[in-house]
Amino acid sequence: MLQDRSEAGEGAAVRYAYKASLVGSAHQFELTGDGLSWRVAGRSGMWDYADISAVKLSYRPVSMQQQRFRADIDNARGGRIAILSTTWQTATLVAPQGHLYRDFIVELHRRMQAAGSTARLTGGLGPKTYTAALAVLAWLAVAMIGLLVMALMTSNWTGALFLLGFAALFAWQVGGFVSRNRPRHYSFDQLPDALLPEADRNRAQ
Image (cartoon, rainbow, N blue to C red; front, side, top):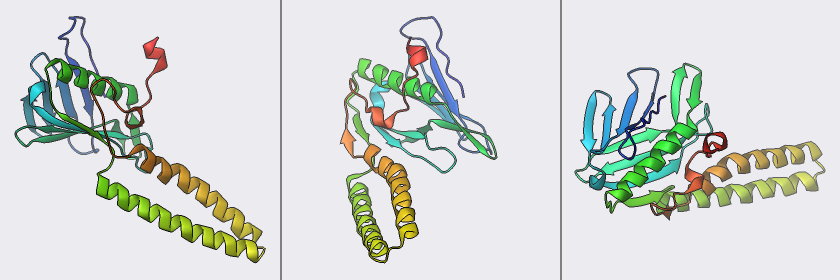
């Protein structure tokens, strides 16, 4: 909903906010000279950048918004907050705010690195979940190939075309989710582009 960077220089505050649902107030975050300040569901806190123990980036599309990304941030004391790249505006509209989210996440990593952070930086699904997803995809692929062969053998061209169209749509949506969410570790210098919204080229210019 909002990102603001003042002209004060290196320690300038950077703000980001989103609504996780139509009910309740916006989740608000701010990168300050002292650390990551957050206010979520009536709770608030300030985490020193060096005290952030883990950041996990992932791609989380939903039916109302395919371009949806998420960052889970853990504190050394056991706290966790989540930051989403979309915000609820109406009962039927979940709006993307990709470049604002990307700028905030990139700046968070930069400040963590400057503070000497040793946080664990990971992306995608957990290894076990990812393996299970691949197994399900393989099973579905075998089943669909079998149906396609049967349709061709019986000259059911309409059925064959339907299966091919469904397979293409399935590969585009589910395949994209699985490929983006491959388990990985990354560094402060190389954030995974697949787990961040595309950069705004107009802003970069």
